[in-house]
Image: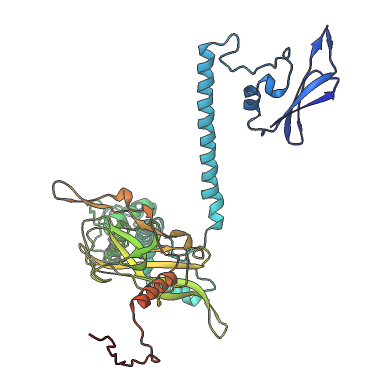
Length: 474
């Protein structure tokens, strides 16, 4: 709506905001002097469309006289001296600016998700890779000594950098220790050159002239190199006993350390790395029931024999007596169409847990799921087909990783050649589907439908027979 009014002003042109409206003021010039009577057009437009409104409104709509012509805002192409080169540069500048803004927006989102979002992550007992996040404190010295009693398990559980340190230290230490003993034997029997032994004297060990030669003889003896330049003679019983003792101890050290390395390499823990779980768990209908679904895949063609899958729900509970139990465990039964034992694990499987009245997820809803405080730990036990070793794979899910109202995308297809193909690109992808608001809503709906189809007897209903007489005369 446009309104024209008359005001007295001493300025020539002015554009300002008055009460949320754009005010246009123009003047008339008669005989070289400005007329104090101006026509003002008030146009109710927003600040976003002010430039378009000024270009579209004509002088008659604004109430201006015929001799006043408002200056039009020229575009870049209409300005004098414009060239195609400047237009191309401006276009490229706009593209670069838009690309830069998108890049900074992506970086800002990445920082919020990966840097600041980590502080808001919930504490896990089991990581996504299966490592347990727990530490033991205030363990007394006697309990720590038990780890050295079970030295085999302790060595196997060591990390590779510590294991290699123990491996190198064991061999170098034994070589140096026995080299020192061989030097002591030569020193006691005065076989060293500083004692100036006679030429016809037979030493305990030939050609040991110092600590370096004693260390080399110890190395040759323990690893059975046998160069033949240094050797034990029959003149010294102490040297013969030391030779036998070092040979036996060297075999023990070789057997223990090589066995530890081999056992570390062949542990079924590494086989568990080729079993992967989906990043998220989903809740949707399956077979007419509300289920929690997880996808698991075997990346090797070798099977896991006797596979068994189950779950534990960890949460803090308070007993009726007022005791607070942290990490209280509740069994979660996972099944596939054939059960939860002896899985035919040749292709990715979708395991599911039925949310019924006995499920701890029964009283949860789509809105309250993210407010819950729990951790769902999933276990998969099986026997490796190639080594017959038992392995266990585990992962966990927190409430933020459980998607309500989604299902997994199919990943198994059949090619024209008759082979089955698994597309792991869609392994963790999900699509949104229609899902009940909560498990209780689904079962209440089913009960209501069942009651509608069911008939009820009325105990107050009495059937009475009435004799009808035909009053019509034929």
